[in-house]
Length: 599
Figure 1: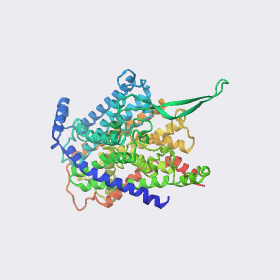
Figure 2: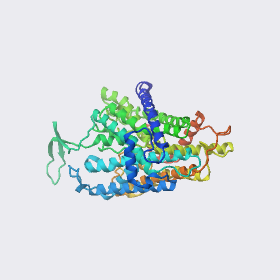
Figure 3: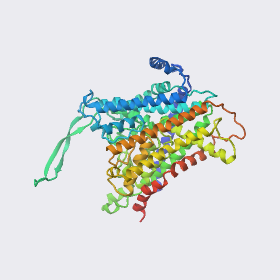
């Protein structure tokens, strides 16, 4: 990679991104800490004025269950029931959309397998999309079903993060909060206001926000289409005089899509579509929005446990791994594709090819912004894309894949990134305790056998789903039928799809034909268990820790806020995350890189 591109293009962009992110995340973290530390009594969050009245009205309407503290089992039961109802609602909305209002284009009912996959996907904060949004989903389905779950799935993640933090902060209490209260407050005080602000900004940048039907536009220069000959007839040439421009409530869905680390776009092209992401400024704002709440939750964590240094340590670990990955992705994309070199027959084409791999990227963003966006969205469990990951170089495409395989803890999803990283922190202090012969402690709570069993479940669930699902797909005819690129790249497409689903990311290489009953069902199972088979053990850890006394710090206590702990935690994340997938990565992107660049 030419050093001047790194110094003049990418590093300034990366530095600006991190500075703006920290400046916005710090005050938001203070608000989140107030919300998470407040009592379960309706309206207990002080200083929020008339909005607190809305909260009191909502929770009182919900009944007595919304005003009492819950044990971890009651919390988990409420969470599973709430999200199961969400799946049924979104599934039914898709199956009936042909007869429902706000369907100006007359979209047909969605097939059962696609409806099931999409319902699970949006409820699980994955937003995997095997369909083309502007051609499949009505305005009502997009606005009420999909965008609604973008709020609820993000609020669910924040609620679980609050519950785990309370487990560390509690002083021998069995309760970890109330799920209904946490979801209501997260939505009302955080997600809705931020979404309104971002949506208004995006509209100002040119993002569409409308309930009108698609528009027929007159093209400046008619486009000629040639239909192939059939039955001995000559080929027929037709000329298109008009173009259909899809419309819809895009900005409102785009805002929560980013802020909630959801990722599901209104259009098939997602954030590469000019109606979703029209400018370099909107692109930068969307990247900030993806990381904003995950970063702010780190600050909230430090405040809620009474030691802001703990939050900085977690945030520092995330940032360290993220910066290394972002530089690696940019470096890989600065390499020219050797297969295109023979096509560079003129000076202009040769100059373009020497500038790096522009295949599959929007010219208004370029390699630097596209590479950074790819790492941001896969680090944060978002899944939104502004470039075609399938067109990245083998190693450039491997970086987003590995970011997901870390367990989506490098900033991660809203809430899920923090509680995933805290699970790794527990594992780190356990290993450190074994090395020095002390009972492991984290934030004054002893880590026992039960916590370590739950940690093992959390860490092993997603690799099992990814690797077993990939093995099933590559060894069956139904799985192989969706592969358009045989060989190492096709294997990478399948591995990426299962990685994205099980880690609740939602992005795709997009070269895999996954909108089939086989993949819709397989990926839906991976998404559901990748979400809730992780959340339930995390809540079990929270409940166990909440019932224990916080021990005072002693000279023998392992410091968990310094550079040494950051280095240890980063090493554990990388080792545990990567070692599970080394053989699979070797069969896919590594082999493809050697085939492409090895000569």
